[in-house]
Amino acid sequence: MKKTGSEMPSADDSPAENAESAEIIDRARLQADVAQQRVRLAKDELRRARKRLKEAKREAKRARKYATLARKDWKRARRHAEKDGSREAQQHVAVPAKSARKPKAKSTANRPRRATSRTAKRTRRTSKSRAAK
Image 1 (tube, rainbow, N blue to C red):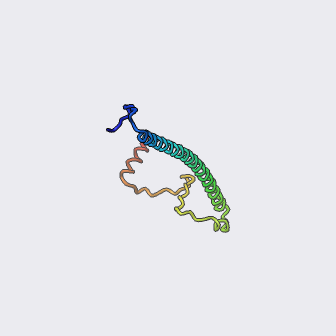
Image 2: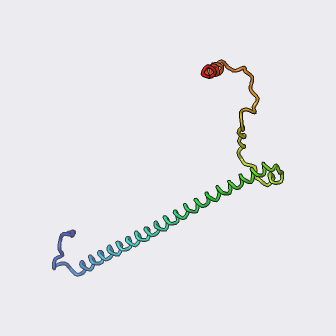
Image 3: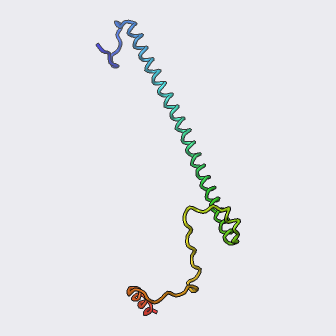
């Protein structure tokens, strides 16, 4: 008959069975200890991985900061080269991949006026704005 945990061993049990059950218990205890050690190692590894991740994030932040400063310096140098009009400085500056923006107009007073042939919709708007004045 199979023994359960609630049954107490009787005096009739042979010493071989007791030794066998003790060996099973020792093996189970050893396996539990090994499992605890694995858990401890896994936690340590996780802790180290978190530290590496934090350091990597800090490094990325430093790199972004450095890249921003380098980009600003490059733009500043390019603007100074354009102001000076020197071809030598412009040759050393790399051409950006994107097309440059159109410069903003400084004032609308210097622009020539367009012809008055506009659509009816715009004419109505201008007449409303003139009536409001």
